[in-house]
Amino acid sequence: MNENRLKLIEDIEKLLNSYGGHDTQINPDLLEYMDESSLKDIIGSLLRQKENPIDQDWLQQFKKED
Image (cartoon, rainbow, N blue to C red):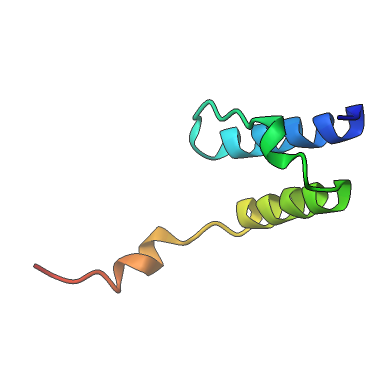
């Protein structure tokens, strides 16, 4: 696997770890079939999700009362 793809996978791991502080490690073999464009799309999606987190207060209004 080339260095570019390994760097992209490392970036994905860092983004995933920034969400909850978990130690996420991705087996590069699992992403072997993905091209660089697909890996960049994953990074873009993670960045968009990080920019627009779910508003927990807003979600609470839909919570079923006991």
